[in-house]
Amino acid sequence: MHAIIPVAGVGSRLRPHTYTLPKVLLTVAGKPILAHILDKLLEEGMTSATIIVGYMGEMVEEYVRSNYHFDCRFVQQPIREGLGHSIYLAKESLGDEPVLIILGDTIFDVDLLPVLAGEYSSLGVKHVEDARRFGVVEMQGEMVSRLIEKPEVPPTNLAIVGLYYIRHPRLLAECVIDLVENDRRNRGEYQLTDALQMMIDRGEKFTTFQVDGWFDCGKPETLLATNRHLLESDSLERPIPGVVINPPVYISPTADVANSIIGPHTTIAEGAVVRNSVITDSIVGENATVENAMLHESIIGNEAAIRGTFHRVNAGASSELDLG
Image (cartoon, rainbow, N blue to C red; front, side, top):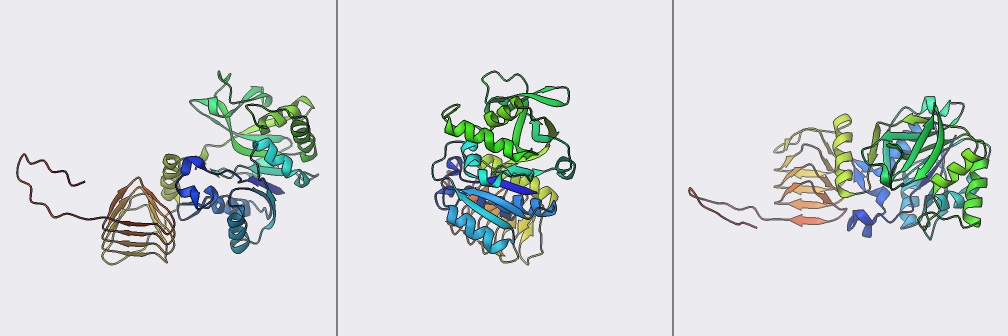
């Protein structure tokens, strides 16, 4: 079993953090987004992958080669023209062996073994309130009948959430080649959803599998929400003299934390220094420094420094002070 992981996006909604770091290397619940994906693949027994990189791709490649023993092939996508285009660039990885395509800004918690052992290709789906920003699935019985990319009026609320199990990759290769080389664009890009519909039109059968544990990391608020959820199930706490810890939290063994209150739902990454601070519902990146600060729902990038000022106040009744 082979995995294909597109991670070429610039992560514009996560700026300023993605000015200096590719989105998939942002820390959530103690490790980079990409590490959560690769660790899940290892749990499922998968050891080979094609990773499609673009923006700061050399940092992604260095991270993977330094931390994993995957049999990895890296493909460059210098111009981002849609997910279908990224799979087109990786078409040499679409052979006879089934593949699992995983979007690089998605962390998932689902048992893949029944999917990988299935008879048919299958799409990870979830019922959402507003399906207009997703690829949408229409079903006929237990089989997919139609796929529509970001419809203005969704016929269903069953959204594709970034997991695709493809039993016959050579057919997918034919379809993405047709899509790109015949310039079949949709909303200005080559959509993987359209290539999958072409597969259905050519006889491929698709089922779906429910992905309730699907966590988007594309925006600051969703990154923090994912951090909260993952810490609920897998936190790392250690007693630190002079530090009040309100679980769940992740505090790296290499972080230096003193005279502070940490948590709940807070990640303190490797090498971070925290002094005289209160931090809740936040992520503090690698080698960052936070001193004399109160942080809530905050993301502090790698090697950033935040230094505040605490005040000593004697305020009488009916007083009004602005300490900003």
